[in-house]
Image (tube, rainbow, N blue to C red; front, side):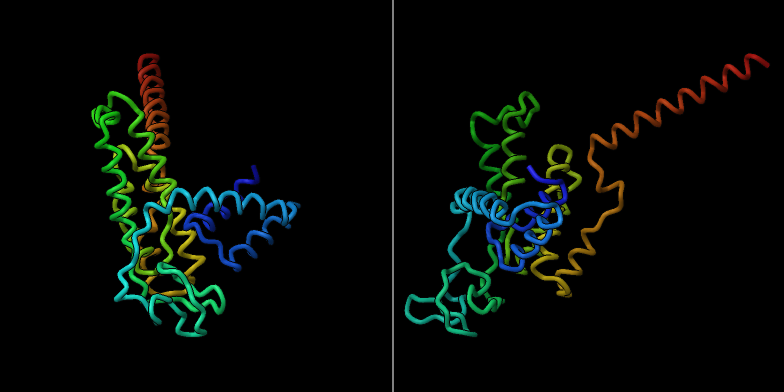
Length: 241
């Protein structure tokens, strides 16, 4: 719909289902550079947020009340300004205070459970044997649409978990694509944080490891063809002599 660069920034900003004022400001600046009306962009963003909200509601567990910050009765309040907020919120909507001790959502575990659930369904059992692509397609879609966490500990764990799976024979390309989204989101939310910066450095691969399996096969085919041509030319030259 928009340029590849703007779409990438939108995906990174909306991946967790929460759009901060800072993220909206960044999107508006980019849209202005491309001559896109800010109101039009807001309509598109709000529509995508509503779609993401429906997909992530069933995945988000209720955090243990014992680990939540300041609590007054059944009302959660920001320890900095006293503004009430919903359980699972990572930042105060009024003052921007980040709740560092909100329980991590363990997104990597939820992702694994969701994938396992899809593969165990009768209609997708054969896909694990390579007899159809329906199950694999659903798993890839599930991975790409999985909400990115916003708690620091969770986003670090999620990033490292995705990195460990980027060489998977079936879903490696999908895991790498998701990892790029998580890295972009981590840079926006926790720029300069030592723990997050260490995780980003740990998950930075070389150009070959980040390349898709299809691209690797293409390069291998080209190299093979070049070698065959060189050998053929050498044989012709020797025969001529």
